[in-house]
Structure formats: structure tokens, C-alpha cells
Length: 65
Image (cartoon, rainbow, N blue to C red; front, top):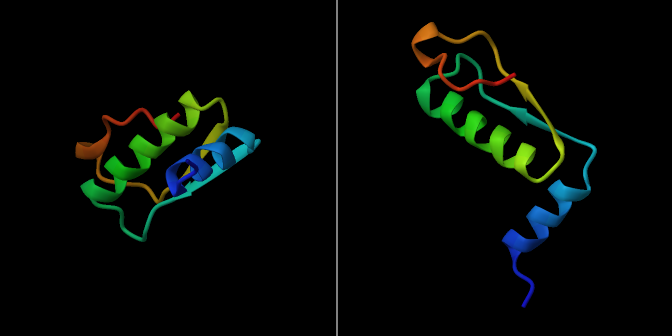
């Protein structure tokens, strides 16, 4: 059975690049969500590109590189 999650995963797998955008003045939730999606996209063999404004260094654990 094909569900929404399966369709999203297929789209990510078939994309060359996936751009991940956070909101203005990113807080911990924003940085964490972007980091999680960044790593998911990477595992699905697409190229993630995180678009975030500079954020406080207390959130600099994510490895968005």
C-alpha cells in the first residue's frame, strides 16, 4: 500500500538536491528539525542544503555541513 510517507521518501530519493529552510531567527526547535531532516535526506542519498540564518552557538551541535 502506498502512503504519503512512502511518496515523500521516493521524492527525496529521486531529487538531486533538497533545500531545507528554517524560519527567521532560528530557535532550538528550528535548528533541531532542520538537522534531523538534513541527516534523513543524506541517508536517502540526496544532497541536503540547509538554509538557516546564523543561530546562537548553543545550538551548534547539529553538524549541518
